Length: 385
Image 1 (cartoon, helix red, strand yellow):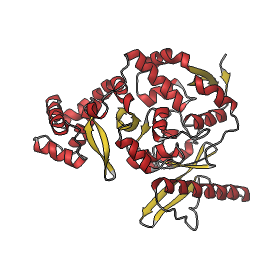
Image 2 (tube, rainbow, N blue to C red):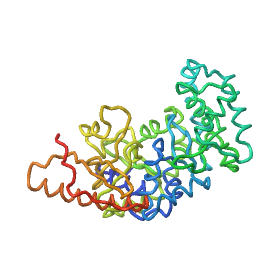
Image 3 (cartoon, one colour):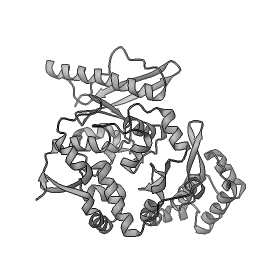
Image 4 (tube, one colour):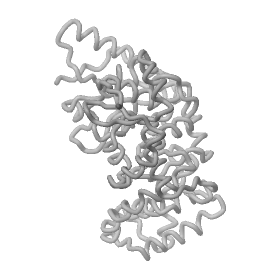
């Protein structure tokens, strides 16, 4: 009979699985290995998502791992950019790309990007990049234009995404504040190769290793695989997972972390307040987000439900606010806006404590960036309900 866990247990164990509590993960590469995929359409936010899970890591450390090809940024699933361990990208795309291509075909054809045009773009990209060459996004667009291929009206973006989804391109070394495009076969010359069912099992296992406890529905949403594929993966991975019950529903986590995690009931976040980036896996990694945020507060993280997720203030595993930053030559300033409007002395004391903790978390972010932290004189007023 699976052990029954409380919702508080789920929060605590997810912090542990995500590298936000317990023994710190030693490097950005270790974070990517644990999480399998870290959302990174916002390049700066994605880098901090790796850094915050490896206390002591710097932006230079993360960029060195990316530029060395140990961590790759591409489109492994959901049509969204993620950081993934370099060797894992190929088998992930082998599972997810067919459904994504079916969804993008209509849009591409409407833009005039039918298969003959996209294959011409592939040939042009291979010619331009073979031999470990790299092009910035602007240079790549110029190359497409010189090859009489369309780039206007998002056509260039859709061309790049298609070539990445189909295994020709990925993002490579740092170019200024962005990355350049490279050939995936050259950038990752020895990818891990798995048979389909083996890959499905690995996908399921790695999700629960870095996100558990969670449900199979959470995994299916996260990966965008079919429910049938998710069930196949669960059957293959089952012996490597521990099942627990939460509110009567089956949740899973990696077996090798379950015992130690369950025993470590006193473990807390690495710092009392975490300043997580926008689009962070701690929120976006699940279909059911109710364990970490109240439904009424979700619109404060995604104002207007426009798909833009603000950076998160997390205390005791709960998302209690958002934050904004400004980086200038003089350093970093950051301000947190908490969800709770203090109406009592006790609530005000709690808010003040959270704001002090956030100031320390912001100083860790500044250290990660390698800039001075400039604490603001007066913290942001908490948002009213």
